[in-house]
Length: 253
Image 1: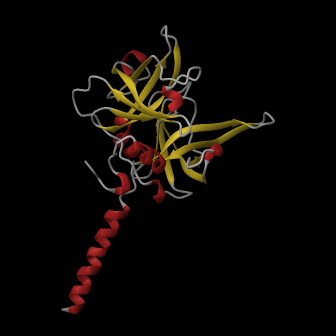
Image 2 (image 1 turned 90 degrees about the horizontal axis):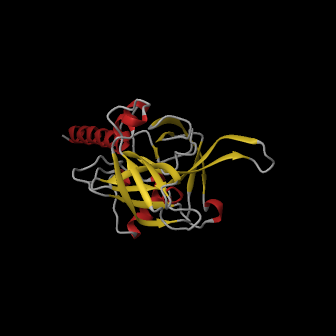
């Protein structure tokens, strides 16, 4: 009886470990799972002049979007752009702007932090639940872990997938206390700003926020980009009264 009990406990332990670790997905599976909840964000100053473009992640099905502050806030005034347009992913990205950018909705800035480079947007006129990016506790991620990014790199395609690993961790990035980031060699460029850095389970571990391309002496730099850790983003969101799905590895509602 005792050996049977230990056998049952062992089996339960194996099952629990499998569930806890989660299944490692292929880049294709991650893309298919997460990309419908990734959006394109365009900010326009007064007069309709384009001011900024970037990426965002839908974090609540009623239309809350997390992105970078520099995507939604006008640099000259330090205030939200007069007009924000958010584009939802089409069923298939073709490279034709007319079809790829046909699902446009307006948005407003709910909250933002320029030191952390975070902004929370609310989509207007949402009538049906939208797909959501699950968020992982970034403390689980380690240097060497495989990650992918989805975004809209300048001169590249829309809803582009790039792959890589976490290269380093940096605390108090650029002297901002509490701004903890991952360095990654995942391909990021202008336009990826505000988009998700996703782990092997397709959960967001970071918000892509900065790139390094030129050294102080003018020497070109490649494969050095930075993503704000999801733990920093979720703490900031809690301060705004917002909870996200999947934090801590669970499948919340």
